[in-house]
Length: 395
Ligand SMILES: Cc1cc2nc3c(=O)[nH]c(=O)nc-3n(C[C@H](O)[C@H](O)[C@H](O)COP(=O)(O)OP(=O)(O)OC[C@H]3O[C@@H](n4cnc5c(N)ncnc54)[C@H](O)[C@@H]3O)c2cc1C
Image (cartoon, rainbow, N blue to C red; front, side, top):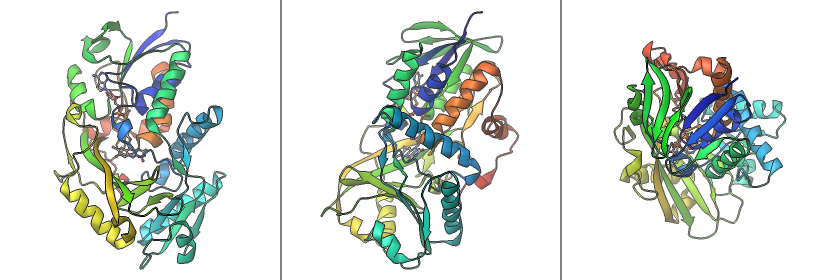
């Protein structure tokens, strides 16, 4: 029997995860096309926080979070450093009852899954982790020492290497320039390194998706939210281990001796042109480009919660484009063009969701069977107007 020829376009954390899982199926002949280098797109700009105590994904998707967490820990166990995991713990600080409820549930879920986690009402406990926080009006904080952040570009390269070892053809510096469609079915792609016949093509192009889909006549419902990042260099060393720090409106983590700080993606307003739009990812510089509003936003948040961090200089800054569907959840599975499969719109959660998307898309491509996660997140939800707005956090 001839093998199924599957081409994946995009070598970010999503595309490489799909290639990794597909390459384990001996009936698949896998091609991964990446126009730059693996993990060089949004993946390279990411904070890489992958925590059990985290507000970025509703708890109904706990198994997605857990599968991803265990998958990365598994990579680290097999080969230390291959996921770039730094175990710093997470501290999620709750200023509102809804957020507190979220933290309490996260603690329970983490404990039920075999990890260590606690919820503290006592400010002294919270100050033991981050002494400089202003805790007036704070209800409490959830903490897990087991959490941390990963290096998403490292993971993309690890998964690309493993896919290659399993026989996949991983091509960097290879842009897909055209999609061949006959009788409404994908038959292959044209690339800067020649033509490839394919049975299935998986779109994992991240923020390039709205432009890439047009090569097959598809208008895909993705817009960009601007993820603006500051790397703050405190005037005096903080003098304590810095955890992943989560507030409803921003989050931070250590970056060597500095602090990586970013606006929480669920606070992005898709109707505000400062937050959201459609931009050309090829014109995005690797560093710089943050907007003045971001500085104002952050100053206000830090004044309120963490004034000591305002005594910092700016060591670096950059912007990433998150590929965001209107309900902040990915779009997975079939399109109106046969053989054109979507693994798009990972938004602000691609690191968390990558392993599940990789596993589920690989299984779907080879068997036609969809996981419950895929069943929940088809393209057709936008056509039918069945978007579940509860995915948008309102705190
Ligand atoms: C500042 C910031 C912080 C974030 N923090 C977190 C976090 O803490 N936790 C979390 O889970 N997520 C986080 N995210 C989100 C996460 O980084 C993204 O969801 C994820 O990286 C998206 O991966 P991707 O593979 O879909 O896209 P990308 O990494 O953008 O990959 C797409 C790839 O497709 C390639 N490509 C495009 N067109 C073509 C073509 N025609 N031919 C060949 N190749 C092509 C591109 O070169 C690119 O490498 C963050 C994002 C940002 C910007």
